Length: 107
Image 1 (cartoon, helix red, strand yellow):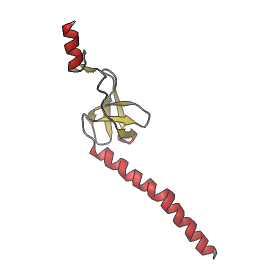
Image 2 (tube, rainbow, N blue to C red):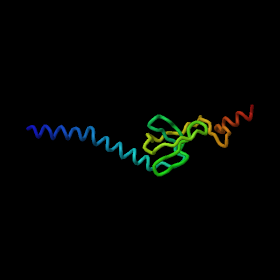
Image 3 (tube, rainbow, N blue to C red):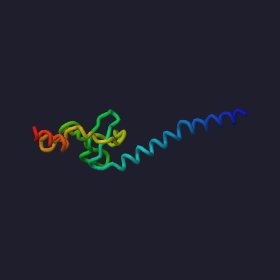
Image 4 (cartoon, rainbow, N blue to C red):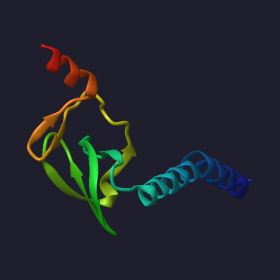
């Protein structure tokens, strides 16, 4: 009887705790392996940016402006959508979307 109770408890723990954690771990590993330069990601610390350099164990993230930060790949929490309203910095020149550029030229 005690063995049956122990087996049921272990089975419940496996299906409620261990198995979902293993599934989530596999999903995160697949995400980290599928990343490429230009993808927008969020780190576990909440920093969002675009991947500009991708190595075997690390990546370089471009955040606001020309700020570059290098992280270990384990710091990637999720792939995020690009913030279309944020300006793009190229060669120290701020570039907004085309609609904003057209409005600036008309004024």
